[in-house]
Length: 283
Image (tube, rainbow, N blue to C red; front, side, top):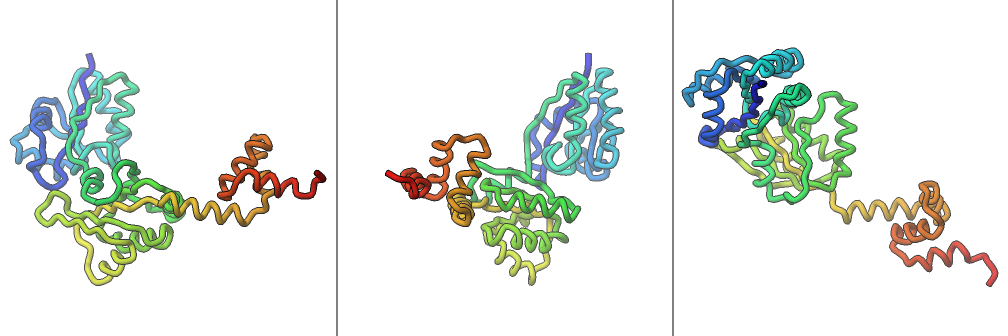
């Protein structure tokens, strides 16, 4: 009978956020797979946990996942922890989860701290709909593509950023997304936690004089539907009505449905579009 893979959330700053269930599980499993064993040993010592550890990180995630799946298949129980927060969120845990599931190994998650959700709830921005992007890509072309996608995103956006890249990222966001509302959260749950609701332009101005310190979570307001609607109307108005009709007919709509969509896009009545298209016809 195979063992179980336990995804154990650990504190993102305040050790008081460690759940009793996670402590009990880390003591009971056969082995703990940790992103950085040098960092995690401090956590384990604090809670008097003496379970053997092995490293599982970005650079050995595939090979080590195979080894761990083999151990799980033999009946051993494995706990996965990251440096801080919930495993598989912006770390290689997803690889181990997928390989375990493909091998028929039970996987369960022990919920707890997650910086992205903590920041979202503190941001003061809409929480009903949101997307998590994590760290932006380092490749310039890929980053530009992601930023262009985010510029059209209407949901609240959550990003992670390191202090030495913060100003550059704020500048890139400002240039592509425009001057959005943003809440900058740093040192979450720690003694010097700060939550700064502002705008991208004001954040840039602030950090031109202040050195960024600590790990940041950026929560940005999504693009408003009104703004998107205005741009769409402007785009349609640059087309002739005939071109607008063709746009929908080429997508399989009949004339009646196409006329209805054109009228909706332009904010006018269907009769007005009909009258324009038939203005040269005899009564």
